[in-house]
Image 1 (cartoon, rainbow, N blue to C red):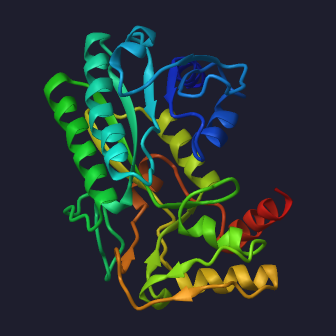
Image 2 (cartoon, helix red, strand yellow; image 1 turned 90 degrees about the horizontal axis):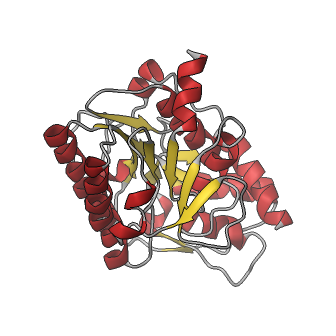
Length: 299
């Protein structure tokens, strides 16, 4: 088993290693075996073998792929520009998958999001539930998954899709949750709480996400398969604010509005990942918030 795992990790091609999720994942994986990474940033410092490439430019990376690689795609997690975000995910998927066909790659792990499910007020979404995304972000992720499924069914590529919960943790620079943490030490930041803070989210610490991805790498699956990598719990934004205020001993400069701009509630059941991938979140919300506050206080 150890020999098999070593072989898998030796042949891992990581796309998107410089982002919020990619960096801690890379730090964990590089301790075990050599990995090759594609990066947009030529100044990114690492001892790992790397090359500069752009997923929107197929020729920039197609010769770097070899037929015994396992490809892990973290690119296109979030962007403030919806057109850029759609291109990275959809056009990027077509470029990558066509290159994988040409190089006879047979295994890809795609990082997706539980936002493909859309709103779910009653129970945590399961992998077999219908997809009804309520945001453009979720819509693009759903379309991207469908492209991967088509290529898997048509060309025999083994694709594992990991739908992640709402990520938070040290180093996250974008999104509402990072605004909350940053507002503790920066009075100029005024986060807006929609639906008067009654929105519910499945919050997953980045270290638990890394654990889930590593578990998927160690557990090759056949054909097309989906797993929820989530906390399996839902937390209101009001609760999140209260925990941050409690640990920081500060009142956050929140602006409340009854306006609803996306899902009222979104959370996902992780029992399939627990059973097959041996994935189980280890970091409680309180522990995760405290460590994240410590990071923002010292950086």
